[in-house]
Length: 133
Image (cartoon, rainbow, N blue to C red; front, side, top):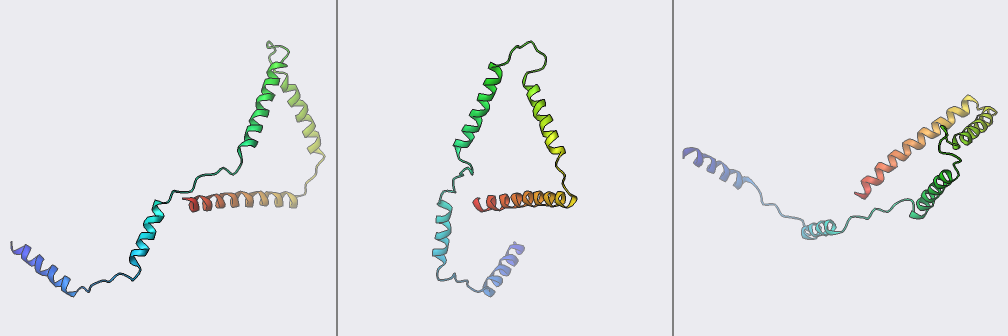
């Protein structure tokens, strides 16, 4: 019982020394604005790319796949016919790129531009994600 009296006396002394705190004149308005801001719905996610290009791209892929299946001369072949076409494209690209000569300075410049764009994209994505949440 003596400990409780001692604690009560200590609390009373501390309470006497403490001054009364007065809120600012617009305290209620500030609190209400924060509460109203919490009640507002969060921004709705909008895709950067509209739906129609995605639909067109997927449709083209489906059409190409259907064309490949429909024009396949025989199912029994071990290699599909389109591998020959891919080989032709690969040969054409290797011929085309073998004629291009890039200096080291240009190669380093293009590499640095790619790195900077990649970093900026990452940083901007984080910035916009933090802003929308």
